[in-house]
Length: 77
Image 1 (cartoon, rainbow, N blue to C red):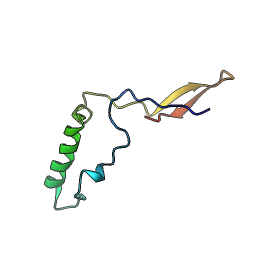
Image 2: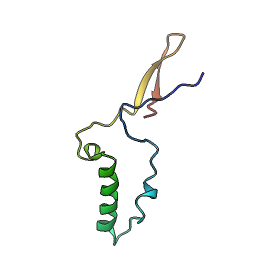
Image 3: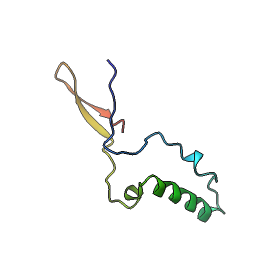
Image 4: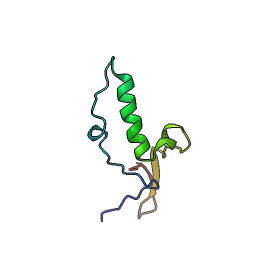
């Protein structure tokens, strides 16, 4: 049985930042890299994650199996 993972966040979890940030960060280009990265974050309306307004999801979740046993799993979100 396949399970469907739903996210409480209306943001794409599979967004490839390399498609939008064309400069690879190195020791000399931080400001231009930061400008591109912040532009991506703002375009996706995700600044609340950077500023701490929205908490990160828990790294693990508890799952009750059919036999009643509770197991801890990695949170897929």
